[in-house]
Length: 423
Ligand code: AMP
Ligand code: GLY
Image (cartoon, rainbow, N blue to C red; front, side, top):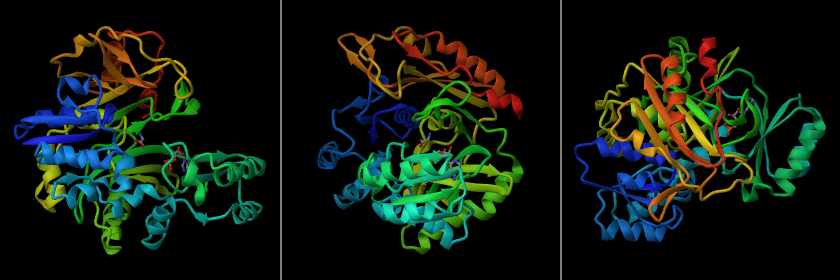
């Protein structure tokens, strides 16, 4: 079969690597892809929001399955457009991707169906939000309603900061129309865990847990980024946490969406916080996380096409997911300066050491080919993933492999997975 993957980062490279392992797949295309994806797929220069071009390409090449990986095209309804053209697609339709596309929607859903999450209020004008703040406990969390590249969440320590935050979101429109509405939410403390799952509209199957590191600097300092590294499984995701979430969160979310007539077919990412009062949902994403996918997918034993087919056709109850009894750590190699300004276009050396290696993976995020070279082309450049028998071993392997590659202005955190030692 022929598969088209929509997207072009480390997550899409990890998905492409899983798809390439399937015996059912003869040919992979990726729009737009990157230099690493180009080694296992044919990259086509079509952007993820160019829906008409994507649909035309899929029709013309007689694509059997299109996997839509990023949030923007999912929330924008690319799956609906592919289906309307008679094409088979993996990912939630627009009416279900709203689970990620609107924080107000997801909070109201959790409230209505008693899914544990932080207390909140929703506002559609700055005046009421500012009035509400006068009696709110600090710190407080402000969230722009819509998609904001993972940056639309402000944690405010003081009333003054919170007032400023409301103005930034709702009046200055720093996150554009994402800030037409906002959620103001209780501040919670605890450890964060990411849990990815496959969903077929009614059945949910949980993947192995992971933990992201969102801040740019060591010790969780500096600016929020798209993610600087991950490990899987999370030692903090205990059996007790798992059974609580199975009872109160996972199936409840799938059932709630179905009850609302918004059957979810695809991947639900549960961003959880393990609070003193038990696990609570921080956020939902309607897709694989990045870089979570870069540690979870290499450990999955199933043929990903079987699982995706089951999600689309509603047969997921027939599938048992299984994961290697090992661990994986991913360290992101970024361009110095990310997530602010950074330079690009520098040649990358040492990539060949990852070829044909089952324990070390180099997932490309921001790379492109330039003449004969592969050069840096983004803030996050590469995701270096290694497996090991234990998390400690996987971490040591991943950091060793970060030394195999070189490029100008290479930057990474040195403490990815440090929390493992506290478990
Ligand atoms: P979100 O995009 O909703 O996951 O928020 C981004 C990050 O902000 C999360 O990963 C948390 O670190 C933090 N965060 C979000 N909501 C809360 C909350 N209610 N309390 C504390 N931290 C939060
Ligand atoms: N790693 C968090 C995300 O993909 O949103």
